[in-house]
Amino acid sequence: MRRVSRAIALVIVVVVAGGLSAAASGPNLVTNADFTQGVQGNGVPIGWGVSVPAHFTRSDSIFRTSPTSGRIEGGSQDRVNARQRLREISGGTAYHVSAWIFIDTVDPLFQVLFQVRWFDDANQPIQTDTIANLTVPNDGFSRHVSVLNAPALATAATVRFVTIGLAGGVFVDTVVFRTVQ
Image 1 (tube, helix red, strand yellow):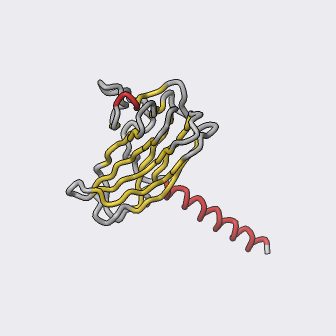
Image 2: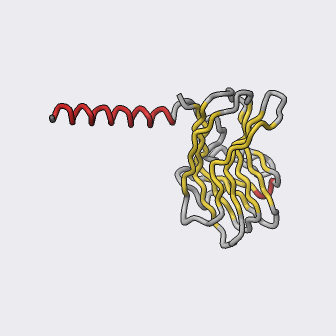
Image 3: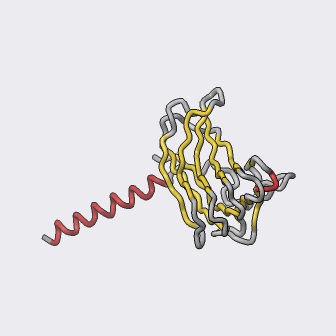
């Protein structure tokens, strides 16, 4: 009976360990994922774009692991879209997507979306997947994770954080987009 129990335990350990390694395979396709590489001339973190440049900056005041994070400031803007374009996408491939998000606001009515928008070779949007739809502040960084399958015709994707009606700030850190083997 002990041999059977040990064999079952070994199989469980192998299956769990194998599952964990599969979720994190391949290089991270996000440039400046921890916001340590500095900023562009307009103050926006290197590798990132934004709909309103003054509302997406690098912050060294609140961060999770590295000495910096990305800060999206809602301000008076109704909608701010911070994003990064990824061009090495293969249609039909599974991708592990995650980010750590901290919402610092007292505003009772807002929305923060963590999304991936997929594009075809003509740069037309195919589909948008939402990893997180947040409407309440949190007490610190929380991790949001998903495994997404790229649509068959996808050749590019945009990782994006959209704030709607936010008067405070959103901090993002350790943004990951990797293939799943």
